[in-house]
Length: 233
Image 1 (tube, helix red, strand yellow):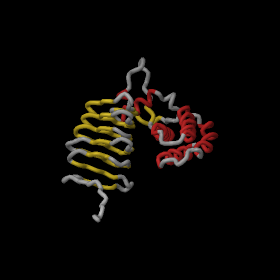
Image 2 (cartoon, rainbow, N blue to C red):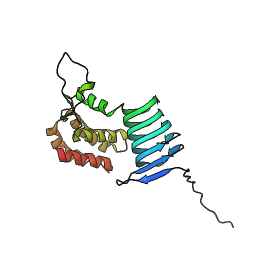
Image 3 (cartoon, helix red, strand yellow):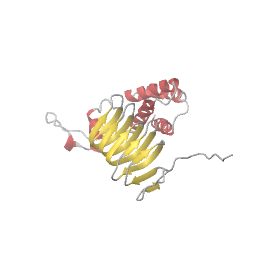
Image 4 (cartoon, rainbow, N blue to C red):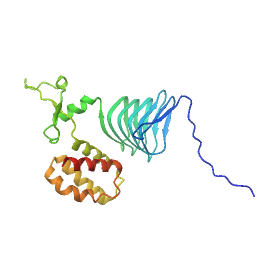
C-alpha cells in the first residue's frame, strides 16, 4: 500500500526579484519578468520591470502603485493610486479603481468597469475645482490657476483640495461597487453615500449612526471611512 502525498503548487521567485514589507504591513514586489497575482492582498508596489502584471479572476488587489513595462491585465478587481503600463487591459466583469492611469493604450471589455483614470494629480484637483459648488464640503487650498481656462477675464479662484469627507465618499463608493455585502448592508451604504454626495451634514448626523450599524462585517476600509465621517460630523 503506497503512501499518498498531497501535491502543492510550486512557488518560483525569479532571480533579481525584490520583496519587502513596509511599516504599514504592505507588501512590495519588484520582479524583472511577469507577475501573476492569484491571492487578494494589500500591496505597496507591484512592479514588472520587463514584463506584464496579471490580476486573476475573483482576486481583489489594492496597491499604491502598479508598474508594468508591457501590460497590466485585470481579470478581477484592482484598486490603485497609480498604474503605469504600456497597455492597461480590463477583461469581462473586471473592475479597476485607478486615480492616476498612465498607459499608452487602454482596452476595456464591455462588462468591465473603470473608475478614476486621471492623467495627473493636478487634473484631479482641476476637476474638483470646476465642480466646487457641487462638492460643498471641499475647502479652497490648491492653486492650479495656470491650468484653468480663462472665463471672460474673471480672476480664477484657487481649486479646493480633497476634504476628508470626500475621501470617505470615495472609499464607500468603492466598497459599494465591489458588491461584497448583503442587500441590507448595501442599502445602508447607499443611504450614507447619498448624504455624502449631497453634502447634507444635518441629514448625515441623523442617519449615519443608524445606517453604519446596519452594515454587516464592514471591511477595514469601510471602518476607516466611518471613522473619518464621525470625526468630521
